Length: 515
Image 1: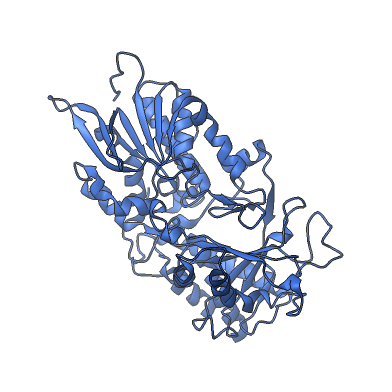
Image 2: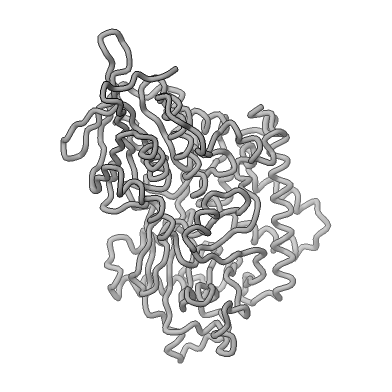
């Protein structure tokens, strides 16, 4: 199938959303001669890649990791723009339920054992997905493996506490992870890299073609989209209407809005979405991962003798606080904590800041407790400090009488309260999901060929990239490639082909669900 080209030889494409997938697809389409308009509801580009300098140093409020380095386009882009990264491997910094720091060797061994069991879960899910009930939890599989393993009672308890950190990977409570579709969480191989210099350079790089060759309109929210046909029933175009009431016709429209937004705005499409596509939007889950930054006068947890080194090796980047029972007043549910030390980043990018991930019920509680407060107010500071003081006060070098140990300021994200983020973070696969792999494929297919309405984003990525920045990038490449094929344009040097997905996914060949 090939679309008819306008008499002037130029086809008009509207890209809704200026995040990674939107900027990627727009850049490719512009380079192939399409007339591209990008409509972004926010007053900035980047979508869920967003930075803030409120604390002084620049920090990412959205994504701040590159997950996997092997054949990862974002890792390659990071090198091109000279972004500074820090590799994070085994976590060997942990505090037990009583707030005592575990020996690093023991902590590292426990962490590695947790991932060994999780890897077994990936394999089991991939090989037996067609037999696993949709109600089965990944955590039940993990508990069974621990119960039948050669562990003493204390080790069993620690393994079950450590695996709770899985919630930070899926952006929601670990108990909600489907076992049937756990294999969809198997990501890209290689190191996980923390963006010490933030995602800013990468976003700016992706935006260059749009800024120079596209029509970028910020603060322009799309509220209605209508597929139009000719008298003979052929595709005539797609009519877009904005919040301001403006209407404009395009040949094709690419929606790169987050899955959470699509879930809530299905009535914006006319005619109504096909039933199978609506079902896919509703079936795939959305996480609620947010961050809390705590900025100090000095990194008291880093020894003075090591503070001048390129890497502050005496304190690792990542630390876990396992099911704390020493913070009853502020954390009676004993929600686990995951903390990053930004003072442990490479020289030139390290600063005396701690970052905590909040997600699931804990994340909902924290974000709601400060929503609406001015971030420079004492009320905001006090509300967050009472929750996080029990944890940073456990770090080495803490002295309640020292001004270095008193936070200067707090900063928290609130994607859960963000309308344009769809009130959440990124996709995941909850228990109860019946046909997750096909749901992803249906969202990828969209309504492009029939209605000229396409979808891209981390929720339509190749399986190894789902829920990641790399996945958003790949999806933008793929939808641009599909449009180029439709209009007879050159598709050489465009990667991201879903047809190549089995080569990327180590478990795909073993999964009867998708063969």
